[in-house]
Structure formats: C-alpha cells, structure tokens
Amino acid sequence: KLHIHVDSSDGDVVNINVPLGMASAVLGVSSKIPGTVNLNLNDADIDTALIAEAIKHGEKGTLIEVDSGDGDHVTITLE
Image (spheres, helix red, strand yellow):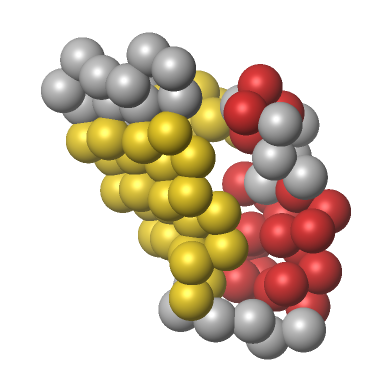
C-alpha cells in the first residue's frame, strides 16, 4: 500500500493509506480528499512519475521525505 503521512506546522496530522491499485488516482496533479487534506504534490516539486515507477517495480520503504520551509513534514512510503 501507499502511505502518505503529513505533520503540518499548525498541528494537524494526516495519515493516508491507499491500496496500490488506487495509488495513481491519489498521485494526480491535485487530489482532494473530502474534509481532510488538499494533496498537491506538484507544489512540493515531487515527480509523481518516479513514484509510479517505484510502485510498478515493487519498491518498498520510504520513497520521499519532505520538510517545508514553514515546518510541514511529508513522508511517502510503500509497504
């Protein structure tokens, strides 16, 4: 599964677990998960094509870890 974990600077913690079959929908240009988070990976300069390739090749573990200038922390892992 694809796991996205966000610790925002304002104290919000978001955990998103997605089956690999649905991962491409979540990794779109901007995915809206109602009531939870607006996930826009392009703002973080994350190449979603590389994530898609990692999924395709069965990679496991932490793929991306991002710390923003305003204190947000995002981790994307494959389990």
